[in-house]
Length: 119
Image (tube, rainbow, N blue to C red; front, side, top):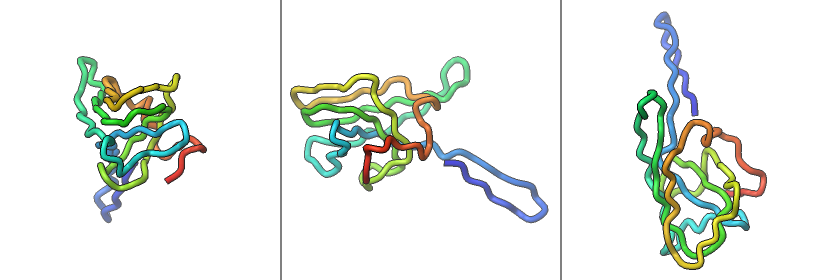
C-alpha cells in the first residue's frame, strides 16, 4: 500500500508499506483463520545481493488442498491486501508447512484479489 503525506511547503513524502504476514487459502476460497493447526507466517524481508527486496515466510496449515497465498498486515485479523494463485494446487495429506522462500514484488500485487476469495 502506498502512502502519501503532504506537508505545506515541504514537498511530498511517499512510502510503501510491505505486508508482514503470509497465509494460505484452500481450493474453496477459505482461510482456516481460527483453526488450531493454522497460523499465518511472519515475513522476514531482506535485500539480496542485487539490492532487491526478498521475503521468506513459513505458514502452518492443516491437511487439505491449498490454492492461494495471501499477504496481510496482521497475523490474526481476517482479510488480506494481496493474493497470489499457486500454479498448481498443493495437496497436503496431513498438517504441515508451506515455506515461501523467495517472495518478491512480483508476487505481491497490492489490492488485486482473485475473484473467488472472500473475507
